[in-house]
Amino acid sequence: MNSLVVFFVGRVTEVSNRTRIEESDLAMVGNQRHHTPHRPRSKTLIFTLLLFSISLLVILYTFSSSSRPSISNPNKSDRTETSFVASLEQFLIHKAPKLSIRDDTVHGESDDDDLKKLDEKVFERENRLLIEDPVYPIGFPVKVYVYEMPKKFTFDLLWLFRNTYKETSNATSNGSPVHRLIEQHSVDYWLWADLISPESERRLKSVVRVHQQHEADFFYVPFFTTISFFLLEKQQCKALYREAVKWVTDQPAWKRSEGRDHIFPIHHPWSFKTVRKFVKNAIWLLPDMDSTGNWYKPGQVSLEKDLILPYVPNVDRCDDKCLSESAPKRTTLLFFRGRLKRNAGGKIRAKLGAELSGVKDVIIIEGTAGEGGKIAAQVGMRRSLFCLCPAGDTPSSARLFDAIVSGCIPVIVSDELELPFEGILDYKKVAVIVSSSDAIQPGWLVNHLRSFVPSQVKKFQSSLAQYSRHFVYSSPAQPLGPEDLTWRMMAGKLVNIKLHTRRSLRVVEGSRSICRCDCWRRNSTTASNSLSPLLS
Image (cartoon, rainbow, N blue to C red; front, side, top):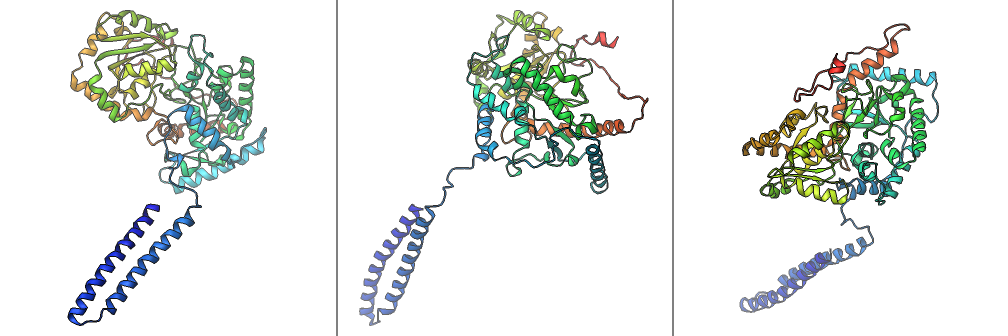
């Protein structure tokens, strides 16, 4: 604004000087032609006074507006944050104190009257939608009710993580940094933070939060099972698990559906194990299924009921500019950095390490997931064409998503792996999927990767550039990001959930209480026979 004032004042001075010159010229002309100079001089004077008045108004406006708050800094909510630690800091310090929740969560044990009232309201709503909405019950957006749980299940656990994050001595039995593990499995935070944000700040169109239970398609349980598992004492954690289950199962909505439309974030395979049997009907947000029985008991998880969500990547996303700059630097054929000695299905790592060690253009390094490990993994992946993604203790590994966002073609060696959003995404376009039995054959894997011609590699890389955004959690959540695809996948479960919920409410005593059809089929891309005992 000050520069504007200077401009106007400068223009006034310039005009005044020009006016004096024009007046002398006019006087000379007037003397020569005997015309009076008074009329042109009056016009020039009026013009000068007008410009002076405008300049004065600008100056006054500048002083009056100086007391107003500055708007030169962009709104912080417009910035997209992909770091869990940075997003959590912003959430706890700036956003959480302003949250105001108005819903009909029952704070205490509900009775039969609460259940009947809810059921009647649900019937009225669904009957109205059936008549009025041509796409009901499969339309968007899905409607989610977020429980207002006591702070010990939510905010207290987030603060516990925030206040202990800088502790580096806390590690699991296999040496993995605890807080880094929590970050990798922090899907519960990203989904909840988006759902409870003011509508004016949200960008997703696939989901909307509702504040009345009878309006909901799904019920989100905002309990941080992974943080509590790793950061609380064992007995304290078990007690908190029992309290959370008691609190949720007392809700009338839970009693009505027996939990079938309730969503539990149980993304770390060790978390919530002691009470899983009480919530087996609910929708679990998982990293994988693990049909070996090492992590989930038979009948607890299924693709029909549950949802696979990606880990939070441990490396930064390689954007279009990064992909372009890194292309000529990708001279390594195959890269792996991580732990080679794992349990269960992860034993394949040691075999692959022995087979690939010392092979030309292949880098196999033992390493951990700390800050130094992140940098080393990121550099290695951005210099490689293919990234080895074998099973870990469970069929899944965060390394798969690190590779995708790094533009490194994943080579998946995990016969029991289930992949996130596979109803929407086609992983054959972005990954090489091979069986364990083939991968450990001498020379087979390297020869297979070298058989891909440059045009095929480029096609993989082009698909990775498009797909990477589907695996980057952020605040605010972005369209086509993992939060968005979560609700798109969830919408596909809605009709089946309503079927089983209504059926459970009408079956009579003595009838068949469980209606199921378990169809086991071997992963067509592998040669694993791990399901043979179950099939026989």
